[in-house]
Length: 304
Image (cartoon, rainbow, N blue to C red):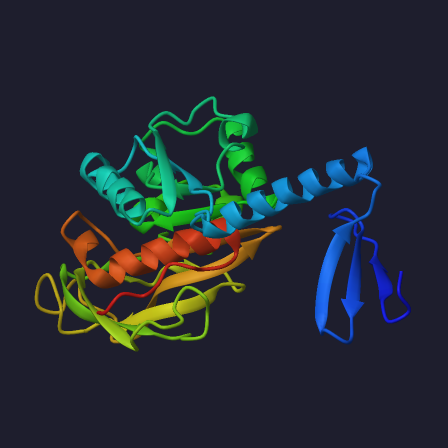
């Protein structure tokens, strides 16, 4: 080769080695393949990397996977309220959000932890008012406690806080119960005020919302509850003059607590299907159920 030429060998991993030949006098460069062909190993590596890049580029174009739905079991079948009309509303509210997969159990006697284990959260729409309805057997009651204590979630809806008179551990489980002192004035419109606006359930909600409902008062409260919302119980709201009136105090209506490793959310709102249609009831039920199940809240607050 003339002295004014030189070779530059470029060993390639994906390509066969090539030699660049440069003529400085003519400013021309040409490439020539080496005589040796690429090895079988180079071909395998090249094909593998091409396949990998194809997979990665395809995955990058796919939409993000939605998180798995939260599995909910509503426990009902007995209530001194109209559970046959409110249970479908509970299910509809939860499922329309797209965040929950809901099942319903109307016979809890005989249930064990294996009955509840597939679910992330239980929703109670149950009230055996002063033990007038079928009493859950020991196995079912222990399963309820263990489910929450072991790290799952529980939502107590409205009159479920009337249930299980004479079972002290249930009072501790849900944090506030209707016992001898409790009552309410006539069904009426009132304002629910958010007490803690930084909790995941209430963060982003307006400072208050309107509700037309029963307003429970003088519930028996446990010392470890965390109140999220309350309402002033108007003393002029009476069934009769000076009889069956409001207390003239702020009464807790939404609260949370820890039970063992689990989370409990209670809403005392939602006496009937009409009261359950209010935007405030709907969004606090949704976010409270998600929090009880996961410890976090992703459901956005709509305009209210």
